[in-house]
Image (cartoon, rainbow, N blue to C red):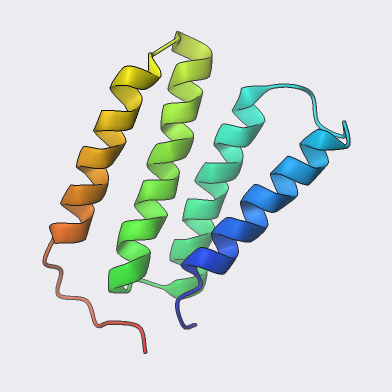
Length: 102
């Protein structure tokens, strides 16, 4: 598939937001964290291993793990957000022998 990262991310975030707003989910942050992790896995599964998916998939998984760490262990956002930025920068700059999508 061609660059499924953005559509999958939008679908996952929008679906979780709508279901949560309608009250169909318990008011638990772990559901949102698991949604981000599922979105990251879906990007990797749908798109395969391309330059975009190797950045977006693990980043969504890391966001989900950060969300769960904040919810379960009260890790401060002041620690999680800089770690996410470092991870995103590292994933973006990594030279992988993977063909580009398209």
